[in-house]
Amino acid sequence: MAHGGDDTATTAAPLLASSTKSSDDEPRRNMYACACATLASMTTILMGYNLALMSGAQLFIREDLGLTDAQIEVLAGSMNLYMLVSILAAGWTADVLGRRGTLVLANAFLMAGALAMSLGASYAALMAARFVTSIGVGFSLVVAPVYNAEISPASARGVLSSLLDMFINVGILLSYVSNYALAGLPVHHGWRVMYGIGVLPPLFLAAGVLAMPESPRWLAMRGRHADARAVLVRTSDSVAEAELRLEEIKQAVAAPQEAGGGVWRELLLGPSAMVRRVVSCVVGLHFFQQASGIDAIVLYSPLVFKKAGMSSNSAVLGATVAVGVVKTCFILVATLLSDRLGRRPLLLASTGGVSVTLISLALTLCVASPSTASAAACVASVMAFVAAFSVGFGPMTATYAAEIMPLRLRAQGTSLGMAVNRVTCGVVSMTFISLADGITMPGCFFLYAGVAATACAFVYVRLPETRGRSLEDMDVLFAK
Image (cartoon, rainbow, N blue to C red):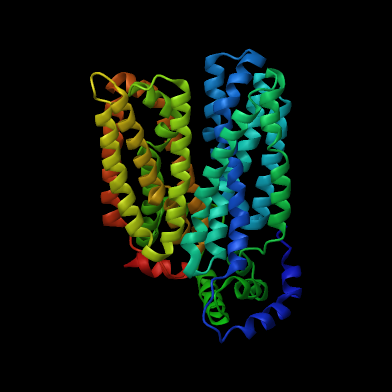
């Protein structure tokens, strides 16, 4: 996979010729880069699908295989912990196999995991299948944002990088549709078909990924500058920009750097002031994103709505679906605005909005006698919360983290941020009910609101604007 650059080299001449024709034209939005980033991002649809599918499928798995509540809980939550294996290995794998090769490998694991889940006949078999699936999910979570950041021209990097969060939410919505559409099948077959549907998409996605070019920065790291230039010409807004990007990449590659364990040492044990600031921004963003309680809403919104006085299951389901639709729509808003307004304004507005809406939600749950009005206010507050989260905090975290990491540290640094993200997500999702029993449900949301307010201050103090800057220019920005 890593040696696929020969094909790129053979097509370099015609590509350069065709691009030179338009070099005198005004800079254009590069649709080829958009297609590549979209294909890479679509791998994360399967993450959303596999994570959320368990919410409905577990009802049938429990009845079919006779699993206990504890086994279902572990089966549903295990992927966040299993993912740490591939998340921490993804940086090394992406540097060895290439970004494209690692995405193909991720799709192979996703296909094998879906097949194993559909054929599972015992609790142990299903746990093993979840582990296999999590390897693919971890690879795609880390490598897709790295590939998107490296393939995109500066003018469209925000839009293309934020596609990841949108596709994750598309996968979640598809899992809800699958749960609903297949619920009428016999118990033994229904949940197996739900997972079996996930076998074919990775096959087609892997074929599509193989048609994409390798990341120009990875090619340059391997000394394949002609191949890197050919890719840059196709994915830049102009030939002049491609030449500038190539020179910046060459300078970054030529900078003193260590490989393997040296990268981790530079990240964690002996970082320079610039690297320390970058790492603190990446880790802080990923921590605050999950610690602000998004998974408590996504996973437990039915409990929240019932606490607010909504008794009908059909009403609860309808409200949950509406929340999912609002979440997806506002990610589109973030996608359209990220390269116009910038990352920092969106993150500031989002974290501030999340804090305010969480306080509003907590107040609606403090009502002594729940009523239709309090239930409506609760639903409105939850919708406002997911809208505020999705307009910045959701999609911009992965975008910002991937683009500020120096080239030599990017794959492993992204792995580190995603590991913090998943651990924090696991803690929030596995403690919400116990925490609500201890400090009440309104108390939980007041706590999350405090975290979000701290996140807003963190963004204001620590995060500079990166809109329109080349990836190689980030070192200069964070050295200030």
